[in-house]
Image (cartoon, rainbow, N blue to C red; front, side, top):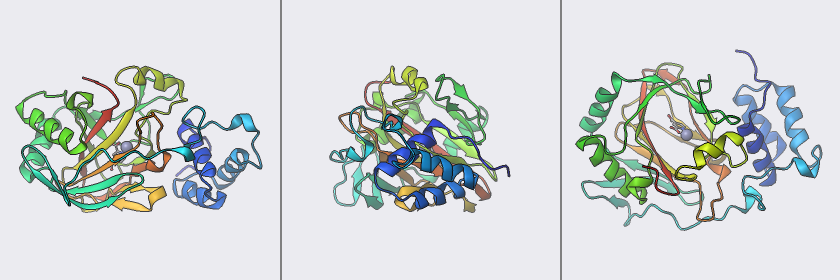
Amino acid sequence: MQKITHLSSNWQCWIEDNLARGCSELSLLEIMLRENFDEEFAANRIYKLSSKGASQDQAKPHAPGAGPSAYVYDAPRMISQGNVVRTSDRDVRLTFRIAEPVVAVLDNLMSPEECDELIRLSSLKLQRSTIVDPLTGSEAVIDDRSSFGTFFTLNENDFIARLDRRIAEVMNWPIENGEGIQILRYKIGGEYKTHFDYFLPDDPGSQVHLAKGGQRVSTLIIYLNDVEAGGETIFPHLNLSVVPKKGSAVYFEYCNGQGQVDPLTLHGGLPVSVGEKWIATKWMRQRRYA
Ligand code: PD2
Ligand code: ZN
């Protein structure tokens, strides 16, 4: 496979943020090599963005006036009484949680029948997934995201409305701040390379997306099937990998009350090695979106 010799703004911010947090240049290089960057190219860009190679005005933290290392952790949005999140129609058990950033794995958020029904309803309307072009803000198809997907509008029917309600209760955030549930299918080799779910504040293309509903604040990824091999959701800075399990979900938060965003939530979906992978994703915004 051809090595990567181009640095997207996502990756540039990622290098800057992690250098600012005190990560070693070598640890960043190791991650970039794993992501198929050309070694000489990656080492050179890390050096240029480090204090040894960069002039002051190249530093570009996410939050104006404050480096990302200054990200302030609010109290978690998700509320659990003990080890259970109680919703109006289902009690959902936590199986894993960390505090900063808030990441939680939830078991049995959806029944097997609900997972199957979501897959059935989506199967006929799947389209190649896109990303937001950092320059223009328009939707673009790229190799980094090789899934097929579709959206449901909020409360599209009684079944979706019940899930939207449960999800909003789990995320403890107003239902109308949520984007519609997105369904994704990955075939063998399908992946979603590491990225942030928030819109990079400095990207010109982000502005059009931030205008409606503001920044994304939290994500819930629900696994709709058991994947035979591969397809884990990874958080490279947390050394965490979540294995897909039908009906379970991973939840994480990345934007605080001041609008700062947390680069530690860099994450991705590893290639599926055997079988296929179906997920449902919910992204919550700062303000009303629907
Ligand atoms: O499919 C995944 O595991 C995955 C990984 C990273 C999904 C998303 N991000 C997403 O939908 O944002
Ligand atoms: Zn994501």
